[in-house]
Image (cartoon, rainbow, N blue to C red; front, side):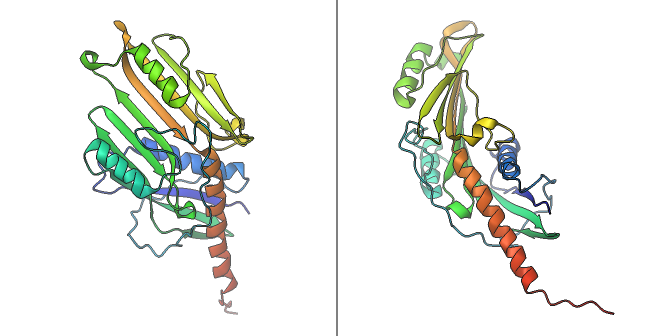
Length: 281
């Protein structure tokens, strides 16, 4: 029997900054990780809005986030770091953006042994924007206590107030131990990879890694990654036009997905064990 897991995005009226594509990426990551475990395939997310208490399964915390002692584990993006609690991350965003962060909630649904079931809604991400600087933070489901598992910052600079490329490059090296390669086509990128063996490697022009080993074989041996990308002003190569920094703990997300499936399927098994229906003959 194939198991199906899908995520329902609940749009909060107070969350004008949240982007659907960001949450779509998170849903895809979670479902792909389930596929990698041989436990699921994707179905269309339900479209009906959920209430605060939908009568679903209350996921319980069974996992504890293990902070990495390497460069990625200690990396800070505007004061945000992987494994940070949701209240701490909210405070950081509020202070930086000088406004209340937007919040997205999600409901997880699965089908097991022909029975559909869903979880209670939970806070899935927070975000804020300060002028042209946007920060998106993904939060773990309750099975890992809502800690931060992904941080993405994207910022664009006006030509009259852009940082110098050489100065930014030096700051990135000092702050993240990352080394941008020579510019190519007006941009440069590098990525750090924390392997499950404990080593950290860097690759020029490296890309992010999908949590599912079936989608990206690197996920089987990688715990987390951090990617930095910079572009310059075409008419002024010494000035930075945009900067993006993303870090994600895909090892934690793989463990989260497995635990979610286990808890939801266990809830279905418990219901079936107490079923008393008898056929009318």
